[in-house]
Image 1 (cartoon, rainbow, N blue to C red):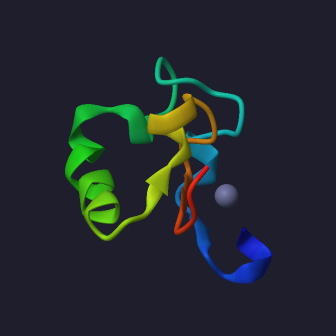
Image 2: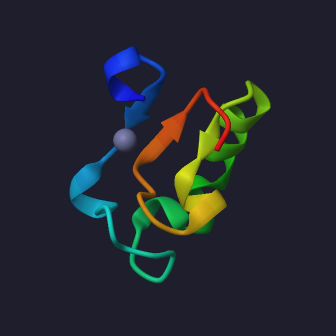
Length: 62
Ligand SMILES: [Zn+2]
């Protein structure tokens, strides 16, 4: 997805690939408006969908 330019990672140090919602910063309530904004434009959060890779949003369905 990244190589096609349709995925973006945010703050990877605090949202490591294998971390779940118990550790990932992006899973905290303060980040909900940020992820809601992406989802309102049709993007998907892997963290919300699959509970890993919370840094990652993509403009393609799973
Ligand atoms: Zn990614």
